[in-house]
Amino acid sequence: MDIFELKEKKKAAGLTNQDIADLSGIPFSTINKIFSGATKNPRYSTLLAIEEVISTKSKIPFTYNEYSYQPMMVQDSASPYMCRARFYNIEDIEKLEEGVRAELIKNQLYLMSSPSRIHQFILSKLMFQIMNHIEKNNGKCHVYPAPFDVKLFDNDMAVVQPDITVICDTDKLTDRGCSGAPDWIIEIVSESNFKHDYVTKMVYYQMAGVREYWIVDPKEQKVYVHYFENTQKSNIYSFDEVITCNILSGLKINISIN
Image: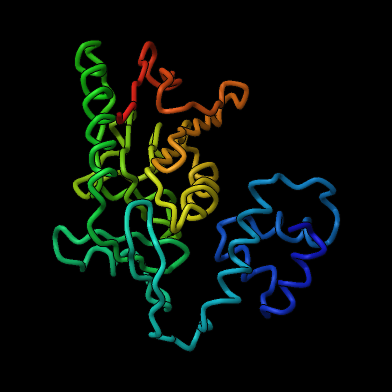
């Protein structure tokens, strides 16, 4: 979607530049420059974030002062989950019972059900290799599987539960999880909602300052390695290839599931 289409969609959705800034986390001044034409070549990730806000607003029946409780079914990285269409915040996450998997993205609450067997099999293989490497090298990084809360920003814009989270700055660790951008995140996607991990979360992870992001796609049997600090080191691997980690020096991952 180019800037001209975004302008039309924005008008149809009834959104102001301030609305888009509040919902996307992008600075208001940046939004103004993009829609005024002052910024001729906006970053692709910024355009994706704006498109996601406008598209979501067009589909979900709510306004700032009128809450709709009509639920809709979508998918997360592992299995079906429920998004309830009204504004939520971090307090709603904290009130959930222990063990309930949930994510907060753009003030929407996503309640997730149990992941599939193949999802857990891949997660276990990855966790074993990462933890083994850290322990053998007396590393200082911590690795956590979901459910593990990650609050990406200082506000309530995004509280997520990545499938695997690696944090090397221990000052970001809290009793509830991680406050700030982890160094490395891995998501294992499902066919039914690949956009959630391929687009929405990737934009937020990059905006927050995540250094490396892996998208593991069991159907395609591919791993998409996004190294935001040096895009030349980003790559696409098949499950049969040895995958190089950029964050943990010397780590080589084998993800073959055959």
